[in-house]
Image (cartoon, each protein chain N blue to C red):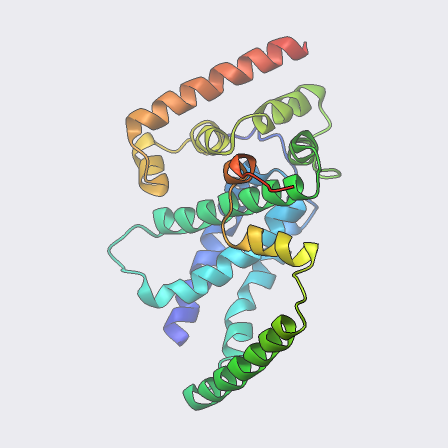
Amino acid sequence: MQEQEIFFNDLVRQYSEPLYWHVRGIVGSHDDTDDLLQDIFIKVWKAIPGFRGDSDPFTWLWRIATNEALSFLRKAKVRAALSFTSIDKEAERISDPTPFFDGDKAMRALRKAIASLPDKQRLVFTMRYYEELPYEQIAAITGTSEGALKASYHIAYEKIKVFLTNTD
Amino acid sequence: MKTNIPYSTPEGYFESLQNRLSEIPARRTRFNFTPYLALAASFVMALLVGNYILMKTAGNQSASDEEIVEYLIESGTTLAQLEDAVYDL
């Protein structure tokens, strides 16, 4: 048990901040990200006994976090649909998580542009553009081929450009 | 990682985050029941849940809207499936 706790604390120390930014890029809201990180690291704690030391902890953690974040978004959309809340309101919440946003107009526009993307495109864009992960690593995390990821990123990038152009 | 991320965090957030996350092992360990206690608890839960279901169905009560919503969300229903569903009016 002590070994598990030492390993877990090392993961928290090394990865909690970059993992925060990864999840935040997907779900947008600071509060949602904070809640999700608790759930993610509880899952990580439970999964440590089954973790094979030969696989990369980064990919393992990012896979758990990505699945949790996407699951959260799916549930939020279903909940919004069932309570007749506009999906646009959900996008608004993702793009403008007050009060922890950069007030710069350009940044807000960029955030809205990213929020307008479908979930998986937003995920690929965040990992490639902000986290600067290689396609090989994104493929290992998402289980998607590199070719599909490159196409997805290109489409996301073009959509953001169009969105920002129309916003000006 | 790029530095022009369009989000910010409260001051001191990451220090407090690490402290809170570091408490997880102690919290999870504290509530770790022995196998016999866990078995007994499962048996009692099964009896209670079964009794609840019997009482619910005996009274011909239908699930509330909230119960239906929670079931759909937790069962993995996607937005596409909801939109494709045909409802009998």
